Image (cartoon, rainbow, N blue to C red; front, side, top):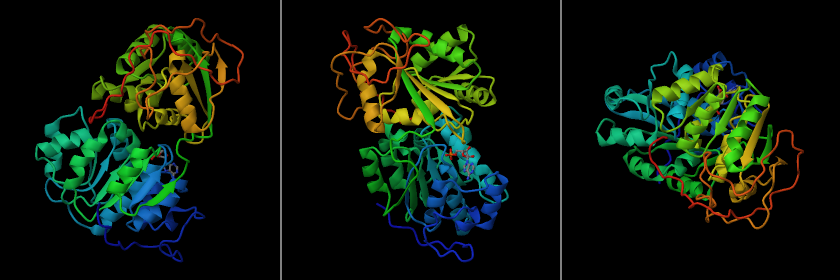
Length: 464
Ligand code: AMP
């Protein structure tokens, strides 16, 4: 537990009392931000704060710890980033060699880079220096960058620990901590990393935690690392963005690749993000799609940083129209043009379904999320629907009969599965024929005849 930071003095908009709820406010200049930052967001093209910004910025600029429940795409980076920059400007200190004044931890390299890119316009014209340390890049170069000290460091936990172990970074002067996409980091064994990082941080400290979902472990994480946090929330946890049109098809695992190709061909050229559960499954699927003539690329933990960056750049620019990704690698990716999200495999962690489908219907656009579900995945589907509190409409295919096999207690190990990622044979015949009539019924479920061993999700500290 940390003591609350001293109150910070903030310039206020005339007539706006400190600490009042500002839900009715629609302008950045009314949120208690420094004029330079108001100008910077306007220059970035933002005219109005998003709901999470309207709620979080006034609290954060008062120095409160913040527990934010918001998905990527809601504008949460600015919600914590603007108050951070403001606090750093006000403290008006220079970082000591090797030290860092504010730390943002993010689960993946892509998200860390994206956060740093988002922050750049906010700090332009100020003395504040922002740096990123993520895996897959030269440790020496990162140690060198840190040797001069940084105002704001965005890091993935694994790489930060590598640098701490080398004595390349000193967190004793770090008075601001942001844990972004904390639920995803929890799934990656982040709690172990945080236990090593947190005791090295300076106190008093302001901590902000942002998460798209609020599993039980998050509450205890928040209770441990946040002090009397103000809660802000823009979507109830687990509820998918209203604008995403969801559907699912029952498809035997062995037929999924062909079915996916049919669906992609129906919407040729539309930006499609395809989720596979494993790195190998994602790679195999991508190769099959390329062979079939699709402009596909993949992004997962077995790819080098350069390959990941190129795939993402191609996808952003539209030269790649189908990006096959694992959950971890795709985390936080913000590509507004994504029109379709395909779940080639259902995720083992039900909350990840919400993250996945949140990659579409962004920036005011419409989006569709299409899941190809094998009978072996009926238990996972049930868990997902439970988390969301809604049923995903079934568009076709043969629903399983009989009881649905149980998933493990917290749903994280998944039900007994056929091998995900494309090769295993589903026990039933008959896929979802193109143009099959929609069925409104929910799955009844049937245990797989020859289930392979259930897999626990891998617990890792490094970004995938
Ligand atoms: P984030 O949730 O931080 O990943 O942001 C999602 C997207 O919304 C990014 O492309 C931001 O540039 C954009 N964004 C953030 N704040 C605003 C705003 N107030 N108005 C318009 N777009 C915004």
